[in-house]
Amino acid sequence: MSLTNCRRMEAVLSVAFALCFFITSGVHGDSLTVLQSPDFVSFQKGDWPISGEKIPDLVALTMGFSVQEDLAWPGLKAGPLFQRPRANVLVVVRGVDSLDMPNSVASYPLENPVPFTLDSVAETVHSLFAEDTPVVLQLAPSEERLYMLGKANAVFEDLPVTLQQIRARLSQDGSVLASLPLNSLSRNAEADLLFLSEVQVLHDITALVSWPVLLKVQAAQTC
Image (cartoon, rainbow, N blue to C red; front, side):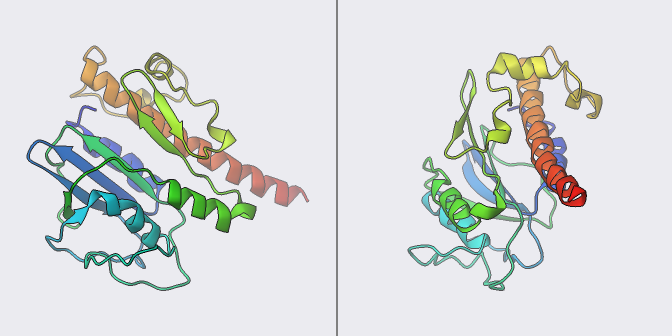
């Protein structure tokens, strides 16, 4: 991912989700950054490291779920029992040592950044909120395509998954190219094109998530 214009992706994410994490992985160190959180999910600023294997537990706790072992980490404050974020997003950015973030965000050193999944969190969401049709999606990019992990909702079946499909999506209706300033990006540069492709996927995911909600509202009004 080209990160020169990561602020544009930051803007896309901060509008769409209630709780947003960034994990950066670079040569000089790794970090976990809380980009946005609701008022009832509080993080304390400090230089407290957190292990990569504990990230699923941290995400679960921010959603108000219990975990098998206590997370002995002072960065997350205890919150109200009956409030939970409506959404949670975690983005992993590799190949960069740091991102230019506002001073107001909380960032922590990430130790032992082992590969992890949020399968346990997804299973909890599906089991507790089955009647609400929760939207859960995990994407794992490779050099050739995006892989959907776990229980991806049927609403995402039509998402472009190969890099060729995603790049073709940039020239279709609803492309992010129509809304993003491209002063410092080039469609001819491979890194910039990959960045724009990933932003397009994020944009399409947020658009797809909004449609089922609108359909439910319309159905309720019709009845």
